Length: 88
Length: 367
Image: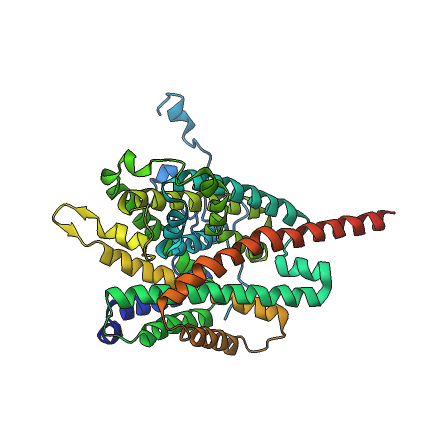
């Protein structure tokens, strides 16, 4: 499709094809989750299901898209014994 | 076609920014600098302050009207007659905006890249993209805008920083410009550059969280103002402000000056691709707004046919001008004063009178 559009209208045709393709994909959703989530629409709490993931000890919140009753998985400092300097 | 979709905060900010970025891509910075010369910076700070005060007034006046736009307010004030009148005016305004954008940018592409292409084909490609996007719906359009805005902002910032080395203090002097009267009195008409103020009159019912209207408005206004400043400052260094010349696409000419070593040259080709994308997104949003206003005025059963009709009307209007100088004339005169008249005069009067009426009704209810 892009080749045909490029032949007919150069990069204007390619830009048209890319725009329409992007709009169609942006409109899609998979099991209620937008196709480009969490980047578009930007979703800060979707930390555990991402291209760049935080270390395990920093994953304190559940994904916003799950709409859970308790978004907090663990406390800010879960391993209190390490903070207090007592190692078991 | 989902048109009950509500915009989130980031999507709303992105939409306002794409409106501003499209104005920067076209000739708005040129018109500002052409009118006030080297006093453009002072003039911009001056009109920015006035526009910000107007924005705060709009936010305050809309507080009593939750989930309402200017059409709902005019219906509350004057019934269906006033609503229809304001609706027709808004439709005409948005059609004018879309028509100017379409012709202007198509002319740029025709001049620079597609000299052998008939202009009709370039217009047709834009209309086709806008039509398909509107058939898909605002959800796809708003998310596409969210995607393109960071790249478009990046192009403006890169253009500014690469022209920074050519910046000379002599180019921005005299800082007051041609004269005090020219910068502060005549330069007031440059308030039209913040065309985004028109969008704020329609934004509230589109938002998912109506209480975030203030936050969204202020953040988007601030970023738009910074982008306008980042385009105006390099323009002063590059172009001769003392003589009048034909309007030129300032951002494109600024991007032509970018040279990042020997590896990256002619980066304006990449920017043109981004800006075509931005124009598509912007025109799609404008047509969506036109469709929305028409649906408020008339009982429309088939939304798809409405998109076909509005896109067809826009295509027809776009074929009327024979010469690009007609467009520049319309942009410099009719468009400028229409925007100022709508945002500063009509909108404020309607909101103020509606607020008075609401307060009177509340007093009568209490008594």
